Length: 149
Image 1 (tube, rainbow, N blue to C red):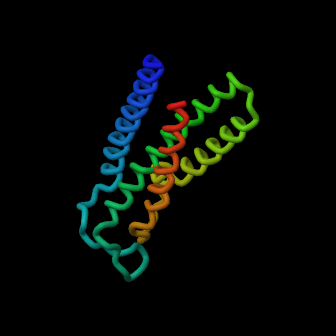
Image 2: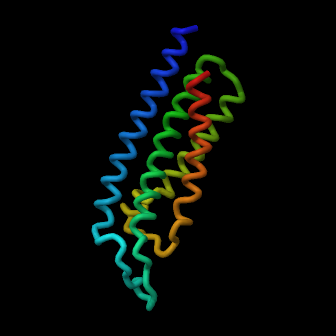
């Protein structure tokens, strides 16, 4: 019993370490993606309005959260595939499909991918990363329960 608890703690510690490393890398990438000085209002391209100065903060936060969610989904997907190889349960197939669809959704909505294709979102403010935070909370619960048991 004690050995299994130590293994679970090791798994959770390893996953947390990987997620922290992913978050740090995503933060550095996101800060290099928005080279303008933070918190300075700017004109919206092709329009007469201004973008609030906290624009970069929201997109840097969204980039970090999105990247962490992608990493969590990859870990979940690998965990579910491992469980399926041991149990052949139809429920696990559903979890694999769930994780795959969310992984595709997060990958395609990631600011990193949008930035690679020269797309930029403008003026969404804090609403850009609130769904990512809620998804992060839900994925954290799934990941914890999947690793723990």
